[in-house]
Image 1 (cartoon, rainbow over the protein chains, first blue to last red):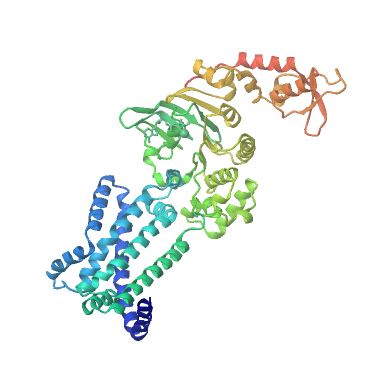
Image 2 (image 1 turned 90 degrees about the vertical axis):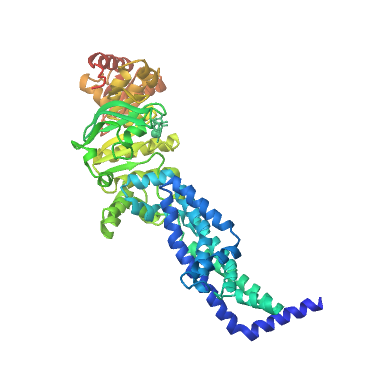
Length: 223
Length: 329
Ligand SMILES: Nc1ncnc2c1ncn2[C@@H]1O[C@H](COP(=O)(O)OP(=O)(O)OP(=O)(O)O)[C@@H](O)[C@H]1O
Ligand SMILES: [Mg+2]
């Protein structure tokens, strides 16, 4: 009891003394995960939409994305290192960035694909019937009506990546994982716990922010 | 204005949904596609604006084969009311109604003005509904919005797939009356799908009765009722077809062939009907008032004569004898 209480205060102390560094690591983490997610969205959402026009390719792509997700994260990061070593980027930002993009594909592609695939056929029909072309149908009707499902996929991907982003530290890409990896090698408990807390706070904050964004983007008529 | 030339539609390998149908929809006419579920009404309708392809034969719109026309432009020129409304949930009522004008690039002011006109047409308050969303409207209100959305860019032709199907009978009659009143002003060319014979009689200038993808009879409601072309048609329109046919004839029409009875013959407590009443209502009033006849009044409420059962009967017998049925023109 007394021991855990003092641990608590020591963690608080650690936070206070290292706040600048922790914030710096947080920024690194956000930049890494954020940029990976942006690229993942730019790939995953259009791909998910495209797949609705090609059923066969859809199941292939979704299977591949599913397999990637089952690779343990540490192994996937490990695989990236030798691959990118070929272009002298084996350690650091690039392999971590690419691994995170791969990890977020499944939730983003799957949710986008499912959402667009399941648009109420009557509404899609009405879009054709009033004379919309493909782009108008997509941007005026299908995407607005499926924002909640697409956003749910993106949220899953973000929260997932904030957690997995910890591994990035082990291949030299920085971020909050540093606190944990260094804490482990140095047997520094307060450092490990601080890292874990900082990552949790970041995950929860990101999810709250994305929920807010989702509500903002969802048209008023569909709730 | 819309001409089907021996049109056939086969889904997949062997589902013949429409089988060599030929029919013409003239300008300003309402043609009702009528028939049991699965007989190909929706398919026939949707081939006009290219939502379904034509397997064989051709459809002409304003004399031009639809195959030679740009699909997207064609759809914007033909109002389409989808089976059970199909409003866009993400758009508010104003955006829904003005969706085709938006696609056509109308100015904001024009769209606003058009929206207000259309809402007035169906008796809904524009300000009240402008910012509301489809799910905040009753079924009847949604159907009305569906209809005026199709009218928004003032298309010469309209395709309406059971537009009032989801409504309860009372609201449905009201919306039908309202639509007929609008049509009297607008004179659109309309293809209207229904599986309800009463609706078809009421709405149609002509009825195309279908069975298993084939056209059974294409004729005016009164001909379909009085001279069914075959057993299927007779069965479909029902045993009470003669009573139904009373609803499409008004006293005014009877007056074109016969003199009304002298109103001085019988005085006292007999019912009064306007000369625009249909003959079914006339008989109903006669029965209800337990008298032999009813007074007929003109627009100024002046009695202009009487109608009795025998006169209605004579008129109907006459009609049946004079007109020959027309099958598959
Ligand atoms: N996309 C499709 N693929 C295969 N068969 C179809 C398709 N659409 C319709 N059919 C078939 O074509 C026939 C006619 O269908 P259609 O929808 O035109 O009927 P309908 O008269 O409008 O019926 P309802 O009154 O139930 O709406 C039916 O047998 C139906 O099963
Ligand atoms: Mg149908």
